[in-house]
Length: 231
Ligand code: SAH
Image (cartoon, rainbow, N blue to C red; front, top):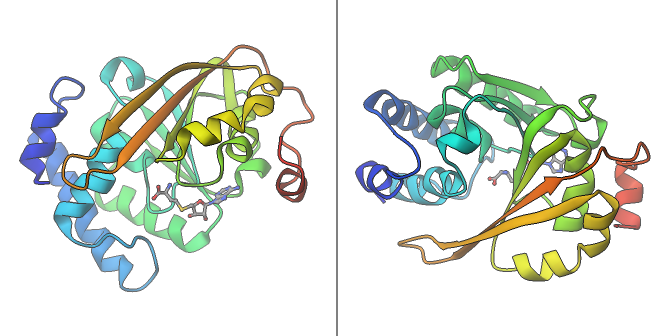
């Protein structure tokens, strides 16, 4: 996918101007450069970076949803989806969280080189974060099975806020296995958006949950317990 194709496909959701596309190009260049030193992504050809990282991350977004929101991307890795959202939506403020220090060093470099003032980088495990009931939206892509992911992410979402889980082909199975987590964490599935990447043709499911009530203090449990006895 070219940058022009991405702009066209997303035109009804987000305005990507020349400055924004310049930033995406710098991000892709840094990704390729740093990927030679540390393992950030298996995707290294620019048309693939555009489709499978940038475009894919922007599928669940629009200005109404993200403008002026406090957002947390948990297990962001090389910045997906959070850095992409921060670049495309300068009015939102994004906290990128990852447990791996080297990835955080990369993320800080990207934010610095692209002069992004709406990005914070936190090197921590999600379940150790001190930001309960804080974010309008928490999101995650490719981090953990849904029931485990929800226990780590949802305590960070404000009451009435949203959790956006970006999932692949197994989304419906994962959702079925998350009934207990959804109930215990007072969530409601608002919608499941199904889409297909145009060239690669893999299916994507973005599941949007609304948090109806504050999370009970006992969640999240420690990582060991979450893994041993998932909700
Ligand atoms: N979201 C990115 C990266 C996925 S790889 C993408 O879609 O490309 C998963 C990342 O999650 C890794 O970088 C790993 O360090 C991080 N991670 C896994 N469990 C985590 C946790 N509990 N808290 C914080 N980061 C976590």
